Length: 367
Image 1: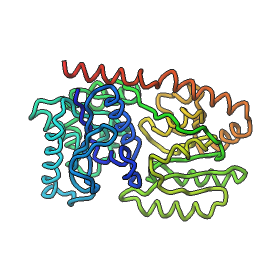
Image 2: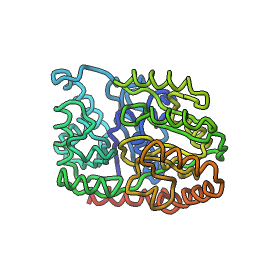
Image 3: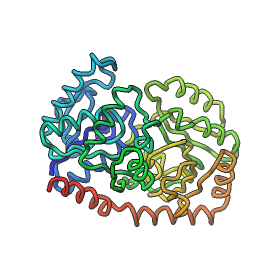
Image 4: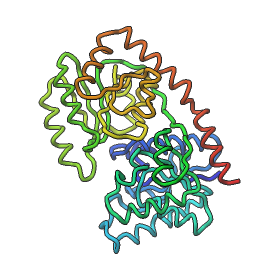
């Protein structure tokens, strides 16, 4: 099979030399999936931004096709066509059987038009709960929202992360999604557990980073670590959070950390905290659980944390403080949660199990 991932900002997750550039969890998932396909004898490629790399390149067996600079052009109608052409040209050069797209955005519509024209298959993967909510889409322009919904209705298959996403997709778009698992990269080092509480996220308003600062201020007897870089359009929030964090003695603000160096941070934590008001299925949860690190969060996809005792679900900052103190002070409770985290990953997220569902879906489309 030849699978092409339309993931313009995937290269920093795929190639370590571009790791200084920011990424999110879905870029990690596409990269892990592409590499796993290659290891099984399939052909995987990616359509990526122009970061100065060669027009075509190969990283870990994954072929890449360059398009345009990340912030090229002005986002109005008359300037968008050259970017469409570059995306379609790269898709044509990849010459794949199946094109795989994640995250709500105009690129899904562009891929749908291409696949219809050249009789190729299109798979869309829901990456965030808001991808299934027309009124909550994280898409800025009306044109881009229209292109996203155009593509959503023309995708040959739609994959979702949770049962909740599946229900919302059916209710709001009348499309049936199939739950597909996520891949998790196993740690390269043994956990050191020198950080009590870790937070990892891109610093954006809906991630609510100020709540983590409040936690650190309220728990001066524990040490906190915060990892997250600035996002386009939210640079002011990043600088504000960084300045406030530097005034908290028990909090280390690390800023952006390349994905290929995150093993050290995840392996150093005793607990992981997520303060987001909405998510998809956070890659950071998997990275924590595979290391036996309990997750304390407001967001619990399909009530997994609660059902499998993988940490604690909080309702507000006060209950999050109570949960953290209970786990961090009680070694028996921490070990119990830690063992359940490892067991859950081993049972539900082995690469063999997860990849079987993807390959089955891809093969069905080609048949």
